[in-house]
Image 1 (cartoon, protein in one colour):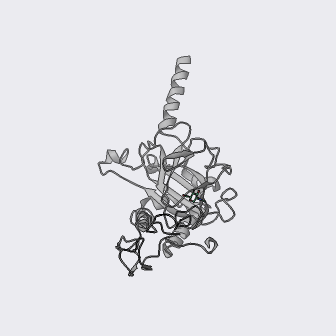
Image 2 (cartoon, protein in one colour):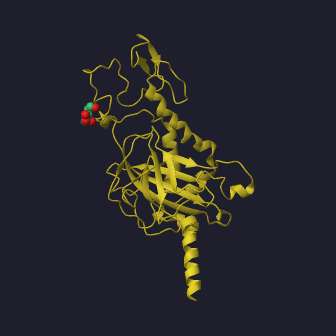
Length: 311
Ligand SMILES: *[C@@H]1O[C@H](CO)[C@@H](O)[C@H](O)[C@H]1NC(C)=O
């Protein structure tokens, strides 16, 4: 009996590390921030998934009895954000997509209840073409990774947010039991200027002959850039490049880095839509808002916008 009990305990553990999980550790650029649930809201579902009709519950937003986390993490557009598995799990080994949603928290992320509009900032689908067997396994981008991750888009305005990362496991989806694994982090994207920004905290009194860092956000696509960081192209006015990737010789080099990220996430949503339906069940506070949020984010290019409060 004892041996049996030990064996099943071991099997239980093995199942936990590969098949059941939740996310409680926040990574920024691959580095773990704080401890368990410092920035990610703790919930009481443990490592079990939400499935079937459970996804119609209110707690589907940030998971069962999710409580405010003690801290809010400050991140910049372009940072890689990861939600790492809890309980020592070491890799997602269920087939299916991952997705990340955000909702603005005007009164601060700690007190946010997630009842406002959400927009989707990332999804991962299939990264390896293959046969039907591989679709049940490692064809999925997230297979084997121990965190759901994405790059924070340039187009998200500054402010505090709840960020909800999820993995949808599809192995039971044919029988109405797709499994949702998810939790919410509290994140802040700071305003357009900070005193320590290189372009703001800049000295004219050394040997520099150029102004290599651009203050604030990039010029909107088609906007005007006169001159350049080092003046070598003279007094020329050129159109700022767009998210389409058009390049301009006189464009400051840091413009290229951020806007290109946009192409990877939001614009894929429509084309690659299969999982949108899964994540937007009608009739609950979380999913019911996704369509509204999606149309809000596609109706206006928020890229390169600053808010009045930034100035
Ligand atoms: C401004 O730059 C100087 C020199 O690099 C540095 O010592 C100082 O800490 C910076 N100030 C702020 C507020 O970042």
